[in-house]
Image (tube, rainbow, N blue to C red):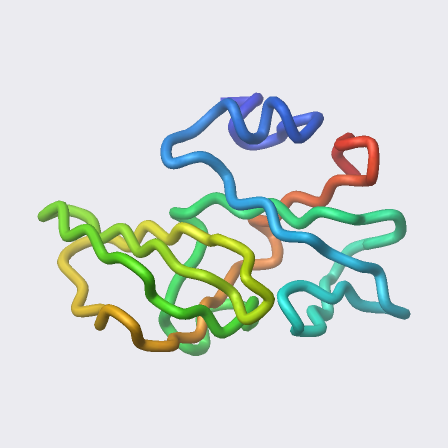
Length: 131
């Protein structure tokens, strides 16, 4: 659980968990972090961050549940009964996987807003080390 919750680098973060952690290109911009064309105001230091990591199960499509990460295009939906897995792409063509609890109606080809809890994200520097 320590490796899952607090990975020290990109390799460990991507190795633990299924589906694996999403890695999105990030750029520090003043007091915020630019990810997938959106400026995220995070309640923590972002200096040196080049990658934002977020686990598929820590993303929601429900407005008001965290901060908006990005608008994403739905490329594939897997309805697994107890979970719905959404394979999507950000506006800047980065792949992102989302695992939703239960049976969810998500329309293929639609654009939806993805939200994250800032406390559940992981930031990594250019060398792949956790910040």
